[in-house]
Structure formats: C-alpha cells, structure tokens
Length: 128
Image 1: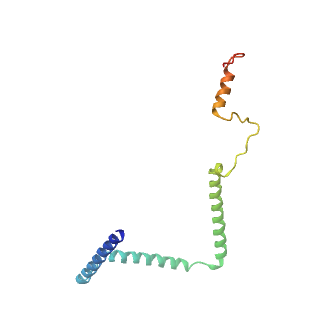
Image 2: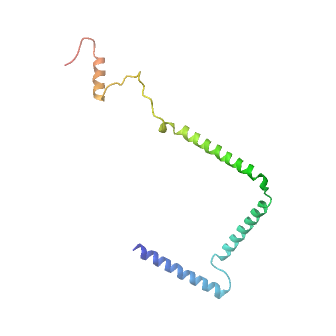
Image 3: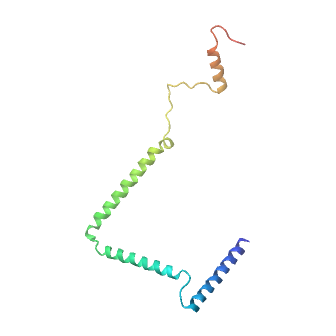
C-alpha cells in the first residue's frame, strides 16, 4: 500500500514538473525555481573565486608549520574535551573502594529494625 502511495505521489509530481516545464517553454521565461538556482549558483561561484584568490596567496614553505600548529591545536582541544568529560563522568568510570573500617550493618531491614528495637529497650527488660 505504501509503495502505491509513493508511486502515485511521484507520478503527480512528475506530471507537475512536465506541465511547469512546458509552461516555461511556451511563455519563454523561467517560472519554477530556476531563477533561485541561478542566483545560488552565482553566489557559490563568487565564494569559489574568493577562495581561489586567497589560496593563490598561500606560501607553501610554511605549510609544514601550519600543519604542525593545526595538529597541536586539535590534540590540545581533544585533551581538554576528554578531561572535561572524565571530570564530569568520574563516578561512572571509577570503582569505589570498600571501606573496611565501616561496619557492614544488618543483613536486612527487618534485622536492623529488631536490633534498633532491642537497643531502645530499658536495661534488663526484654519482651517476649
């Protein structure tokens, strides 16, 4: 069913494309997004010309220094990010050391309640 719906939508869009193109040819002017594409292409061409102009001024004798600086900067950035991540996530990655001096306490809440109850009883009086 989904395939049929996709096929019908694509068929309608294809028919719309042919109708729009025939109207463009008949009227002799561009209607459907052609002007926007031309403007966008001109904008991309200007950017590429600027990049080409600035690239022609690059001195390749210093390319090794630039590459080294780039590698060191990326390494420092990666180390900084890793330290920040490790600092924020330390409790996930570190195992807690058991405290030997601390008593283990009762094995269950019931036994803990019983032991607390016995401690609170007056001396010499134990209920049965």
